[in-house]
Length: 241
Image 1 (cartoon, one colour):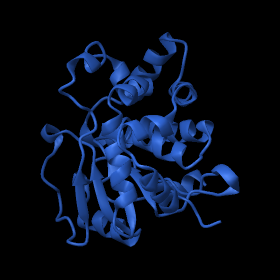
Image 2 (tube, one colour):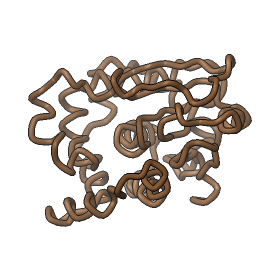
Image 3 (tube, rainbow, N blue to C red):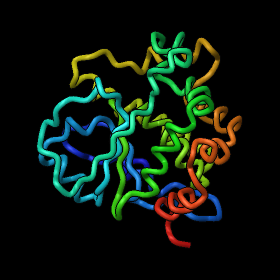
Image 4 (tube, rainbow, N blue to C red):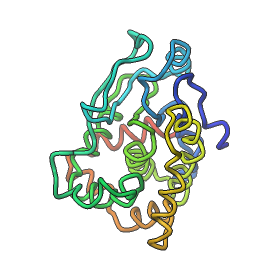
């Protein structure tokens, strides 16, 4: 199942369908409904065609304005792009002591971010829920951290168990080796794992601990995510009963 969830979109390296996961009530997440990815601006013409062939019609870009560049190939007219920067970079107290450390590349900051800025995640989830018919892909730069946070919240609201959500996050590390090699950069994986190990934990354990300590539904509601939007999100993400 993990191999089937990885998508080969030329130009990207860390693209994964969030379908096929067991959810509450004996249901499963729907394939081709929600996809997480690294930056889509690297897609080639063949990559955009693969995205269309997968049924995607809405792109949600989680990057900050200064991180955006030009698309390597023309973005298809069929695609609706929604730009919702997730970081909230102007909130300096939130990021001080984090952004210059390896913890910035791990789920260690998720809990603080969701609790302090629930409206940012809620806006992304609402955009997914309200998207036009077709698949939705959300992406950041490497498809691991901001994309990981939204995947964590969306899957939790769909009733996927924390252990499965954590396992999904971990899949990015293997996929990113090729991306860092393509960019001529050092693989971040070992440094991030060492940073977590110094704290006696792993990325998967942090995801599970974070979910166990958060009222995801309540926090997203506090951020403006309505009951109707939550129902629409579940309807989009889950296979029919």
